[in-house]
Structures are given as structure tokens and as C-alpha cells.
Image: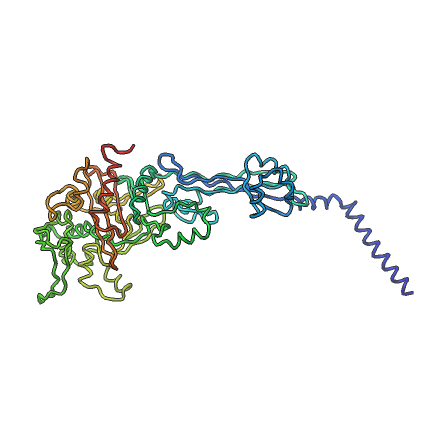
Length: 533
């Protein structure tokens, strides 16, 4: 009886199995064929190329190139590739699992049913790395690449393909082509950019140089030296480590993110504050030192001029011309830090300028700032040092240039920008006679000759120039036994300024000896008799 029961159960199970096999194979065949076919179709996503970034004259600053690659998958039969790939390509494919193809190989590879991937390689001119930035995992992560990522980024496309069970592509069914990103046209003059970069490379000192169209705010050149020559997509870990640990910090954009003591280049701001508070500027007898005394007449500290023998009788214009520290010690202490800070805030001198790449906010100190950050009281000595751009002031080269552009335009400040369509302005209402006085002093910096106690600090550099430049040198002490930062900031031609220029050499020494001669080269390029076209 037991055997009959077992046999019956076996027959029943077999009958059920047979029934479902017949049902699937015959009655439901179309339904399951549709399901199986759906498993063999794949949607492949493709992306359009990133847009090209151009300079103002159509020179490519950053662009994308597309290369075909074969990437290893389980369905690839190595033996079938030997008649298509070269020996070197085969070795590379076996070693790394992928290989770059030549155009003539694409058809043969596709005929085997293998899917070809296209890789986008982003290329840059090394002189503009700090402007255009770079990508991280296909997204802009710095510079214009980041600021305009949504515009530059290519749009996705898709392709529906029918595959064999082994994964080979059997047929392409539907394709929606990807769209390339939009191109970006900038205000950069690459010829100027390349010229400045090559000149800095010869000197080989970390530096920052910016050239701006004074009237429009267009940035014509923005050079941070050093940069890197390696292409980002091709940097190996060892080289990347060297770049990161390089004491010259080649990835730092010194023009908009480096913070530096401005030294004497800040003196026009102190002079404007003084003229706003004093209708009749005083004259000081500069003996080469300034004695800070208590109310009882006791000398508490002595502050030296850069010229220890002194400049003699000095008014405001001469003080700007010869960069007389003693004069600015006096007027800074007379005004006090609160008045100076209020005028600095009028110019937003330490604020971000609004340029369309990353920038750092600067520091222009106040009583509250020192109490909050330094946890201590503001002293008169702090005010005295602020008067010559030392102490706690830290600005970016762009912030300082922005201030001088405002002077050039008698209070009108175009927002600096790199993409040419952006034009905005702010306006300061300061009496015209104040602008004229400041400009007179800045013009004499480059045009007034004579002995060392009387001549302009940049006279030697500009004395034979076929144009007139207004500007200011700066020599900012940094301590720790290091050489001073070297500055020159100016604009020209004087009668109708077209260009504003800032030059900074980190630990370059005297502004008169280092930055001013370099600025002369730039103005010669822009305005000289044999200027480049």
C-alpha cells in the first residue's frame, strides 16, 4: 500500500511539472518571450562634451577631447582582439583592463558586439589654471569650471540596445544624442597672460599680477605664479603629493585668495580718510623717526621712517610721492582707528569684490576685531602701524587693485569680472578735490625726480616712459627674518585711465626695486610705443 501511495504522488508531481512546462512553452510563450526580450535590452547613457572656455580673441583656454576606449567585460574574448589591436594595445588591455582605440579600429570592435566607451579628457593651458580651475569627478570644483559648471556641463543622451545573453550588443534600437555644454567667452587676453607668466617664470618668485580694464572691470590678465604644468587627468599619486607639499603652493590662487600685508600701498586710503576729516592738511617735518609720547611728554615708542635721514618738510602730496612713514604715523594717530576703519568700510576694501571665481575676505582691523580675535585691547601703536599698512591688515591683490580702480574712476567701481557679459558698478560720493589731491600724489610717485628724499618711489622705473602712470609702491615687512613683500599698484594712462595693474612678489623685497620695474614692463606692453597688438 505504501509503495502505491509513493508512486501516485510521483505521478502527480510529474504531471503538474509537465503541465506547467507545456503552459510556459506553448500557451504563454509570447508572454514570456516578451519578458525575456526585455531582459536583453539595455539603456546606455552617454554625456555630451563639456563646453570650451575661450579668451577674448577666441583662443581656447580649456577644452574637451573625446577618445574611444575598450573596457574589459566578461563577454570579451581576448583571442578575437589579436587581429585588431596592436601588440602594445594588447599588453595595455591585459595589464589595465582598458585600452585607447584608434579610429580605424572602432568598426571592427563594434562588429564583434563589444561596446565602446568614450572618455572625455579636459585640457588646459597651464598659464590660466588659476582662472579656469579644474574638474573633480567630472564636476567643476574650482575657478570658472565651478562657477559656470551648469552652463559648461554636457547634457545626457541615451541609447537603447538589444544584447545577446552573453552581453554582446546585437542591435542599436533607439538613440537620443547627448548635447554638448555651452561655450564660455571670457575677458582674458591670453597673449598678455602668457607674456606676464613667462616673465614671472624667469624671476621664479611666488607672485600675483592682475590687469583690469579700469572702465569696465573686465579682467584682462590674472596670473598667480607658480602654477603646474601637468595635466590634471594624468597626474600620478607621487606627482600629486609633490604638488601638495610644494612650499611655493602652486595650487593657491594668490590673486584672489592670498592674504598679504599691503604696506605703503594702503597709504592713499589713509590719505583719503584724513582729507575727509581735515579741510586743511598739515605739513610735517620728517626727521626720519616718529616719537610716540605720553600725555606727560614721555617717549613711549619710536617708529622709524624707511629713510632714516628723513624727508624734511612734507605735505600730503609729497608724503604719497616719497612714501613718508612719519607723515602717516602722525595723521593716523591724529584720526584714530575708528575714523580710518569707517573710511575703509566705505570702500569695502577688505570685502569680497564680486569677481566670478573664488576669493577670500580680507582683514581691516578695528577695536572690536582685535578684542574678538586677539582677545586684547587696541593700542595707539596699532593705529600707528595701520597708518602704513602694517600690523593686522591683510588684503588680497584683487582687493587692493579694486581700491585703486575706484581712485582712477573718481569713486566709480566696476565689479571685476572674467566672463564678459557681467557689468555692474558701485559709486562713492567723495569731493572731486580729494580725488585730485590723491591722484596728484600718485602721479608724482612715477614722475617726480630729484634726490632720494624728494623723488617718487617709482620714478626710476618710469622716468622715461612715453605715457603717464599714477601708482604706489609698497614694501610690507613680514618678520621672521624674511624679505618684505614687494608691491606696485597703479593705473594709466593718467589723463584717461584704461588699465589698472597690481604686482605682488612674495618676499620680493623693496616695492621700488622689484614690483615697480615689473609693472613698467606690463604698462610698456599695454601702452608703449611698440606695444603688442
